[in-house]
Amino acid sequence: MNSVLPTAAPGISAAPEPYHKGNVPARLLEVAERILETETVEDITARRLCREIGVTSANFYNHYPSLDYLLLEIAAKGFAARTRMMRKLLKSNPSRQDAMKSCAIKTVELSLKHPQLFRIMFGYFKEPTQNPNYVIKADESLAVLTHIVYGQDIFRPDDIAWSHENCQRAYTFFSFIYGLAMAMSTNMISNPYGTRKAIFALVEDLTDSFLQGVG
Image 1 (tube, rainbow, N blue to C red):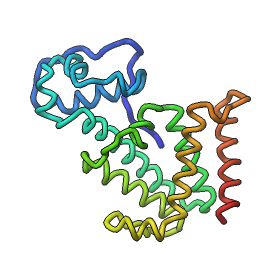
Image 2 (image 1 turned 135 degrees about the vertical axis):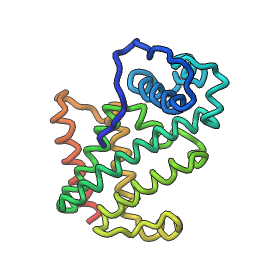
Image 3 (image 1 turned 60 degrees about the vertical axis):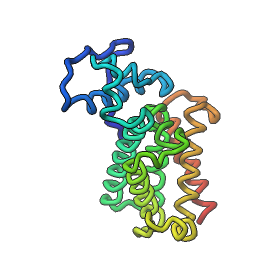
């Protein structure tokens, strides 16, 4: 997935801004995204975000019900970008195998380039349903992945029981690429050659092996 997170030089904080009601929610989100690029999700607090944009801590809860809600909004943006990537891939009309390999590579790339975004997108929160937008964007992403796997749009976000029964190949493939990305980003699967090219060549080989297994 191609992330659109803003970047900033390590150790440089955003200059405090005067309080303007209209820009506070966006600025809180932007600062959290910047921190995720150089630090960990555990380093983010509502107090810190408010301090960095120059508003009092109480202002945070005028715009977001909780810190988790804000972070889930960032995760939702990540899924939206992922969905755009996969839809663009579908439009290029690749073979099923090539499309699935591209999805695997993009997932691993996300985990390596933006590990904290990867964490909050996939499984960090115990109650992700507190942010309905996150649920919608995550379901949209899974629906397009299912389309890639099956060659047609069959995922039903309003009938998860049906989807669990009829989209099992997509769930299996998602589990594979998620697990592969986790293993790569934590060096459980090492990169003895140390190059980006070697990583993605290995991802392609492993995905080929997986696809041969599922038919």
